[in-house]
Length: 85
Image (cartoon, rainbow, N blue to C red; front, side, top):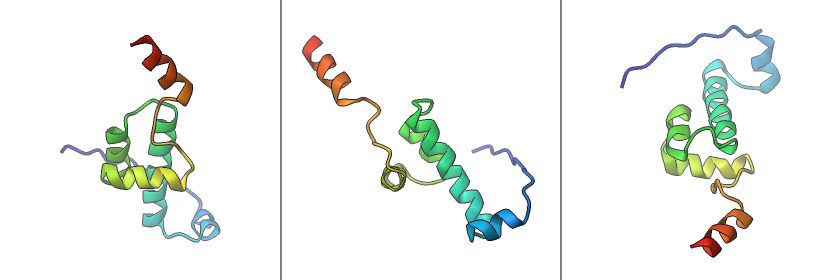
């Protein structure tokens, strides 16, 4: 896999405010971005897991921590789709 290194500058106080070291912060930031993009239907579960750097099953578990449904369709959409079939 080819990777790209992305660098951002943050005030040191951010890490103490969040009670996280820089490595933990970066992992959490990747996960939070992946969850949000999944929630917005921008990426699939597998792509979001890749962005977060975790397995798909770990990502699905993490969705619960963020109160995000693992399903990208609402109950109404599923009902409508099954009625059209």
